[in-house]
Length: 82
Image (cartoon, rainbow, N blue to C red; front, side, top):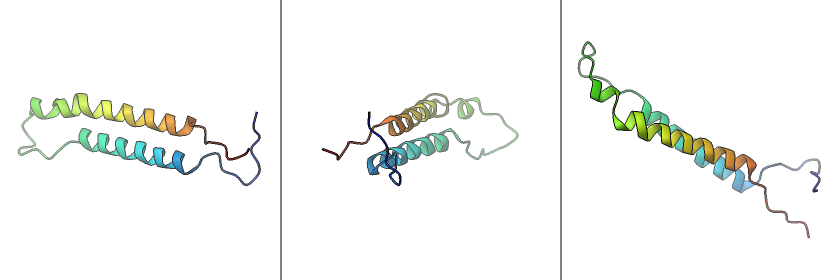
């Protein structure tokens, strides 16, 4: 069992890179899920609200981003000690 020395970080550069990638994927998913401006706000457009992009693609990307974040947190940095 390895012991963490004071002043060292639990994460290395690769962990932070994976965290950034997961964050970008989640932001893209939220932008895809966000609503656009309707031509006429008084008219409900079923196809615009329940489009494949908002109902299927965006949630899948959001879950993928969360899985990437879990991987980034759980990923064990390679030890440089010999």
